[in-house]
Picture 1 (cartoon, one colour):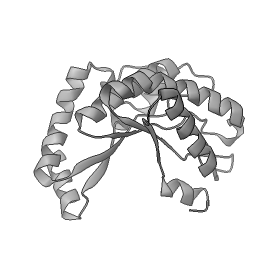
Picture 2 (cartoon, helix red, strand yellow):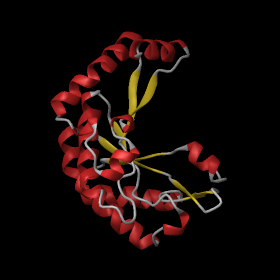
Picture 3 (cartoon, rainbow, N blue to C red):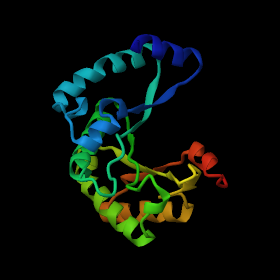
Picture 4 (tube, rainbow, N blue to C red):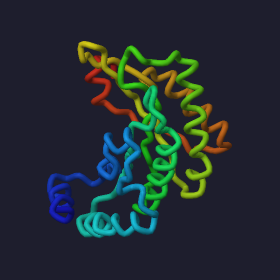
Length: 200
């Protein structure tokens, strides 16, 4: 249960957590377009968050960041428009939790063989993240990109979008320039570096 989970987090010394909205829309629902819990009106979703907020306050655990649902783009599937709206909703829910940071994965294929060129990858993501700017400003939330990975045919994990530090920094700088203020940041996932055998 929610209360017991937050109690456990407190007891092991976790003072901040990453709250993922992924369970409210499954990968199958994303691919099929089927209605999901996160498609409900914001007022309904706010009520869904109340037990989490109450438990967090009770045990002194803060929401350090949230994770928007993913994937939001897959080659050959028409999901981007819907998932952009889902991401905007995740930003609103992040603010309702009293949280400042929402991690929004870059758009990238899960298969190494389908990876886009750096130019096409940037152009696709630039439009996606730019579309989020009004919502980020409205709710005073910072959107964090993240270093990603994909797999080859042998299920070997390979570095993907935003995995080179200079590329990640350039994306953040250019998006903030487009926004006219610092509303983009970066989530450094050490686990992703480990599974792709990267250099911390």
